Length: 139
Length: 105
Image (tube, each protein chain N blue to C red):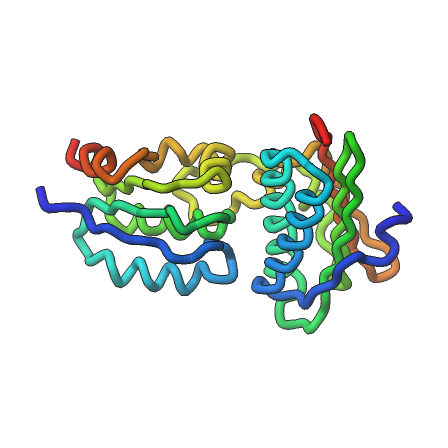
């Protein structure tokens, strides 16, 4: 997707910096008049995805996470990029089962999949690209 | 039955960045053997699955008959609880009085 070739925002791969990605998303959603419920779900999906990238790939590696966002009247598209080790092919796309209610972790993928309509992942040329797409009811 | 422990959570974002510290905070507040906790989440504007995991760990720490009631949950917190279906694990209450009644019941 051409709009994501260069990230619109790039932050250090730390859990604290994930907040900057979240702020960027919320500001853009507000400016575009995106429904609050949809913005909330996009934010949650973004944070869970970025946390996953930091915790399972990049934390401590001194790398960065990029985010590009495209909002139209009907579709929100988020593209997260990073230069960490590639994830397994089905990590983000296989159906995530709900964990045991008393599990303390393991809900991130399920939350992402419930908050957006499609999740696509590829890794090429040393760049991992996670694309989250959500249909919007109204803009 | 003694009053529940009341914990005001002061983190506007209860996320992975603060979850380890928050877990230490609440763990020290809940003494071994405590069975009732009232969590005031009024100040929490956003929570992710890691923050939610701390609440689950708190519940587990209290043992099988432990209960947590939540008040002040805003839209983002409610959304997370509903998506994960953990709104059935915690008592989601509209007021402190209601939460105390639930915890006494």
